[in-house]
Image 1 (tube, rainbow, N blue to C red):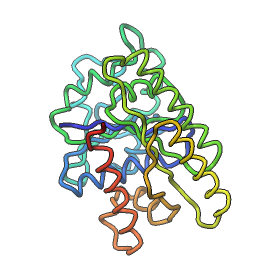
Image 2 (cartoon, rainbow, N blue to C red; image 1 turned 45 degrees about the vertical axis):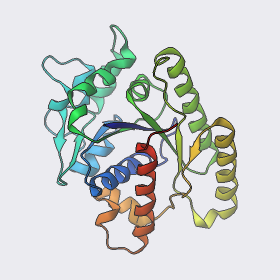
Image 3 (cartoon, rainbow, N blue to C red; image 1 turned 120 degrees about the horizontal axis):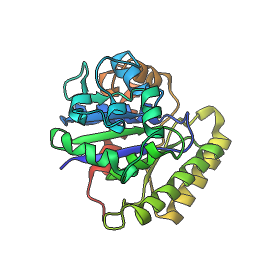
Length: 264
């Protein structure tokens, strides 16, 4: 069964795209077929994986613009890695299409579009843009699981709280018969040189999550140059030779197992 994971935070700059890619690479390394949907008008996924923010061909923007004859399978692009495909955002065209989106159920467009590719993949990862936009609503409505990525910083913490509230609203208004489970949380970019601040905020996040019924991944992802470089080069952690990458790689594999398991 295909699992659709939306990766989100109201705040930008917390490593959502890097986390989405590392999770996708972990799944490919496990032999799964993976599709990453770039739902950010900045085009970060396409830049990292294809080396081009604006690749030729159809994009996610065509889906929201309801371009005649374009289904999501026609907007997928193969990558250098077998088993890993992406749907580029379309950048400015995506923002324009979302802004002009109308008709019936504008928050359910992506969910319906996934029908064209759902049987082709084991995992679909949606890299959401910052903010609480109609694009984020579409991604959350389409998802089976939500991963909130946060730095151990107060403004980032506030961002996941806001996104969690949006999940509640979507469950109440759009998905009353198939509610999303409570989100999972990944604490990212933890800096060992800021032990006091990051340690305090990480503890506050865990306490808030416990009270809210959310799960926090037990292993925080450190701020390391090799992670950023791997993402920038379109590589997975399993493709690196650095010994330090093994621990982080294993952490993403564990996170993948958690997110794709049945949740009671």
